[in-house]
Image 1 (cartoon, rainbow, N blue to C red):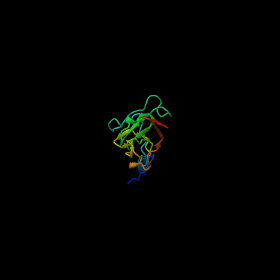
Image 2: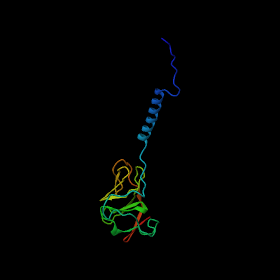
Image 3: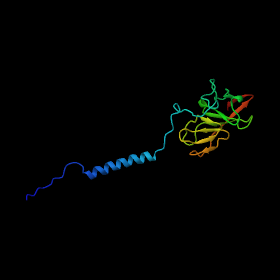
Image 4: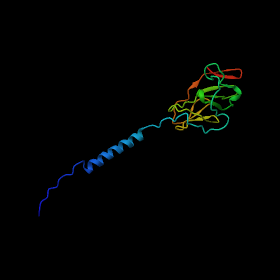
Length: 161
């Protein structure tokens, strides 16, 4: 019998390759699992709520700039509200003649909200829901209420303060 010497092949061994590929895959998996979803682009987000209470914008003469009318009191339904997308505010009328305003920016991850149905404004990013009547959280993941905005009502005109 002849004795042949076995020469090792050049390059990494199979075990080294499997370990490297496995570590890279684990890094990718952990990164994907640990990351939080980014807020959606507000220019592409569309509300799925219904009715006249889900408006896309405010008045065209600088509403919310302090002084220009945002809405007429008759525009705000009792027991619900109206979104003013450009001003990032929702104005509600909890009871007849009482008006409140809240930010439409979700307190969970700052997504803009444009989906209003009845008295609930919903965040399409992660599913949080808030009452437009008092700003309270109705459904998590948000835990903080909506930021209240100051408004003034003069006659039948509502303005952001």
